[in-house]
Length: 108
Ligand code: SF4
Ligand code: SF4
Image 1 (cartoon, helix red, strand yellow):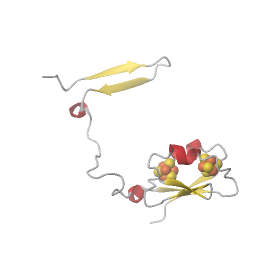
Image 2: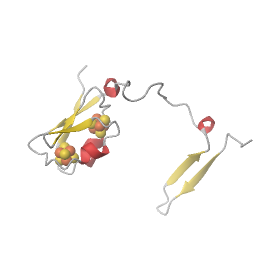
Image 3: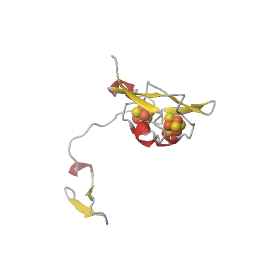
């Protein structure tokens, strides 16, 4: 039987350390999902709302490519955010080199 309960640290060339867990028992407590993303409307998590500024957007679609929730779709060659699933992580703003994504405080 494989030994559980151990982890190892690894550094890359830039000295950035990564912790590699051997299994779920090694990991600290964290949120887990009991359903797939289709049923998890992660939009409820959002405290910050990304808004795409049409006048600045060049339709490069980097936001579509990098959104971890796959909630940016393409309509008429333009990105459209599905707010039922957008969790407000802000990655779309980070990757947008045109400054076309504004992060607003979510109004609940
Ligand atoms: S990354 Fe920015 S410029 Fe590119 S499609 Fe998305 S909002 Fe538009
Ligand atoms: S904030 Fe995060 S989840 Fe929402 S559209 Fe941008 S990248 Fe996707």
